[in-house]
Length: 373
Image 1 (cartoon, rainbow, N blue to C red):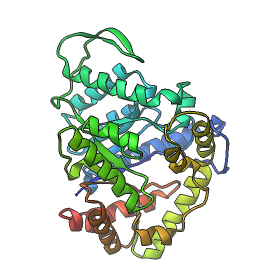
Image 2: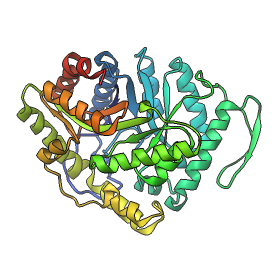
Image 3: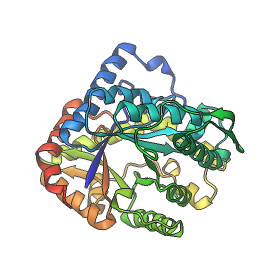
Image 4: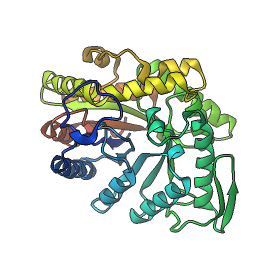
């Protein structure tokens, strides 16, 4: 089992819940922002010492939800302070950014890191399209064409032209080229049948990062395997990443209270305006082509916090003592058979002391016990 460390880098000095999106940036205090960036980069670097195999960075806009409008800048800072961990960009929102720019910057990160990049191709969450004034209706065709163009940028040794439906370039020849050949490892979302189909077509690892139950996660996994076999290849365990929140302490009660408190802040303060914006986009656009997929999207779900006890009973979180965490990880592996696990430790406004406590427990107790599951 390999592990990936996710940290959304939230701005945690906002207290008002349920704000509209975009959130007014008058609430951002630059001095506090400086301190948060330093703390968050230190945490990501520390993840390598803890034993995380990958360190993740992602992209969000116009809210305190995350302070990474360009995750490639964060990755560049991490690369210079790490030596072995994979650099997971999960990632750039491909339909919103110039694909040539993504190809160039990802190649640059791969060279800077000596071939450690895991290239995430993400479609983004619905409201991000409003931020960049891009029609959500075109998200899938833009996504597919952009991915094809990026791969050609990485693998074509001679200048080429591109005349597609959404992108047109007279001549392309990116510098630098990636270290990994024919191209860096790819990761895509596995949150819907359409996403799974796309990921299988590109032989990308799929991220099942919003698990509501094991049954639906297995459905996406099995659909991915079926599409891959139709395309003539066989996925391995490392083609499946499962994500869960994580909180570990000396007692289960302490770990649970930490996760409860952070989740309340995440849902109420960081996620409130985003959910409202996502709901409007999903209702008025074709971001999801099938109604069933639209209704299942978390942005349209009931705005209630699922009791933590229920999540633990279902096996959907890593929370409790180190021994409990070991058993929870083993259970998830038995249920889903994945080879990668993404752990999100900084949930909402979880204190730095609690983040470090969990990371140290993973290093000293949990990871040594689950590497061979």
